[in-house]
Length: 217
Image 1 (tube, rainbow, N blue to C red):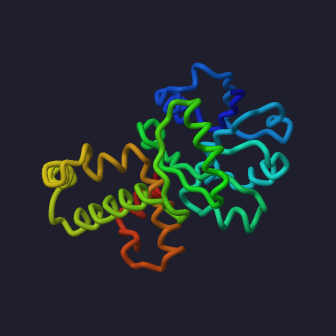
Image 2: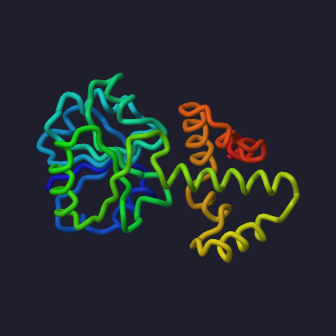
């Protein structure tokens, strides 16, 4: 396949660690320069879509080219309503890109055949989740991080103790503060903000300490 990857260098390196790209022709760019960049492409992997949703105006011009877009802070339904563009959503947040199983969402059942073919050619595994702001894993992890910040905010325990307790008590590979560093505190803040706005659920109301650190990052 002739693949265009859009994203910063760090995220592109993470995608390379995931494997599967070596057998294909891959061009990497840090931003979508224009419609001409999509000519003769078989696939676009947009790691930065959440930050640049207006890329959808270009993708709408090439509806036959599948786009694996980082859609965590919005939903595919919202994108389609605003830009009349149908994408395949992926969890491309930092810290998740090189995971062995990619969390994906779609709006149309017809996309299943397309995605299955793409994933087979890339030798990637995927897990289908419902189209929703925050998807599943990012929403859960960011909520746990937020709760950990609330605990630290109340001086109940140190960050180190919270990380250790979480790993021992739940057998998670990382504690919440370790996760926040891997994802990036600003990314965590933006995911929580998007989910809280979309759901109105106070479970996602952001810790003052987390918000402060995100704004200062």
